[in-house]
Image (cartoon, rainbow, N blue to C red):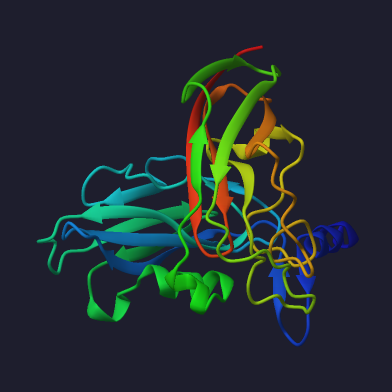
Length: 281
């Protein structure tokens, strides 16, 4: 029994240099406030991300008592399916020009741990597009000219499908070509992701552990030893000639899911969503 317990524990973590331990699974998710940005109309965007403390496990936390915003509606656009590791600038909440000194809190409860992030307009938290691009992709001169990719979903944005029935989806993604294509650094760790338009279909809401994609999609989260824009030497796949990114999604459990076509150029993201209601097979 002791040997079995030790084996299970070792399978859930990986030791690196010094005393650093990276857990593959079994850990919780921590929300993060990334700062605020002012919009041309005088309103403000509060920007949130998160840290999934697992290096491999993707965690599902449905909207409700374990995943909510306050004050206001508990659902304000946050994800319910969390990719491993640190994921920055994931969603925005627009607040009025007179928001003042108020705060919006995002609460996540997982594995018995309660974590919160507080969004506010405190001057120290000011952010903008050029700064975010430098943070994510290491862009410098390019960040002043770069525009986010444009994504359009072909077909309806609400569909129904049976368990086990392939759902064919197409996203049309275009970009301005800034920044130029560049592979991720070959050194470890990779500080910044690769440059150039790419698109991956992901699960934004619903238990993504019950969804498979054909072809298999690359990881959008930092992953230094896999198929990710942060993997050493990783280069964006060739863009289809017609800029249409096709995938077949198969759902293994009933429920309501939101699939996201997530495009990125190394500096800025663009996305389009499809809501899928999955019935019994």
